[in-house]
Length: 157
Image (tube, rainbow, N blue to C red; front, top):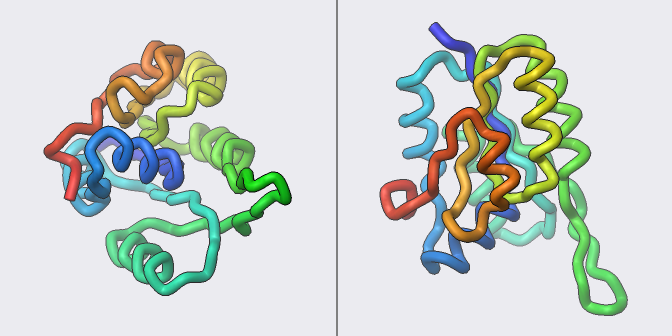
């Protein structure tokens, strides 16, 4: 049975599914789908922490499904822009997990991860699956994936 690690760029998935469909992503359905492909060794969701009730409920729901939730403070800059991405943290965790699993699943549309995926495929011979919203997922990320899974209606609430 394949061992699988899942990594979710929560902000990216939230905003791209909202922009494309005006709907939420269904993490429970994702878990069910991936668990039929092998044993989920680990699953981590990376999010920003704002401290509101709705966010706490969402994080608890992710934990009930089986995800470990990692939080980074949400930083509002003076100019109105925001900071809180997890690219480096996700990269470090993927590199560590790549030593122990057969498959890495990344949920993101961020093209910055293409180099990471190319590296773990080359160095560890892994299968790398990417889930992202069509039209909002970088072509370079799709090209770096062993398998690209478009997020469509069947994975939405």
